[in-house]
Image (cartoon, rainbow, N blue to C red; front, side, top):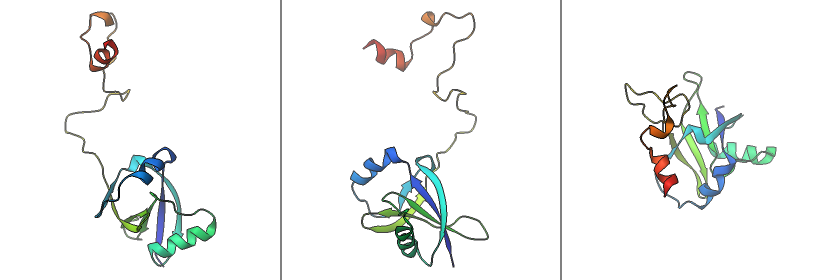
Length: 131
């Protein structure tokens, strides 16, 4: 019997997902928006939905089911929507060769020791603060 790995949509994103318009076709989802959950054994994604509903931790709108295969440990991704369970795919951003994110993650460089921050050129953040 196939098993499915559950990926739960983060709570702060659930409301925006609920009110987003329905689009047909494969949904594109970002791994950062989901938290890994348990696995459930079921014959189909709908059987997994009903098994989880009876267990007390139901699948909610926006949650994902990932079919787990023994060879690759990953498989087909399905998303739970109001209209049913539909296909989905992970969207992983490309990292351009030769560029690395800053250690702080903000994209701005830290001031150099001995350099006066008031004399450095203004950034977009500074310009917004001045308006």
